[in-house]
Length: 77
Image (cartoon, rainbow, N blue to C red; front, top):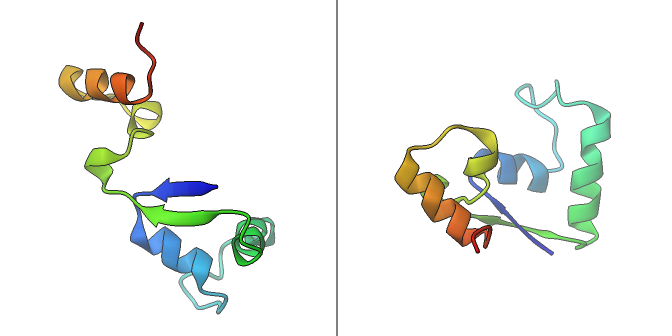
């Protein structure tokens, strides 16, 4: 499975098994993601924010972007 992520820092934290002061606050339960990444159950791929169709699920968008993402997700008739 390929997951598209628009934050390079998220990808780096998931791929880097070394804890550092900036990531020590991350709860142990979130290491589940890292373990499954190591087992190659999924991959993380960067996608720019402007091309991230999931943006429609997280924030209000201008009409033009909203319609573009709706079409990209095949949510139109």
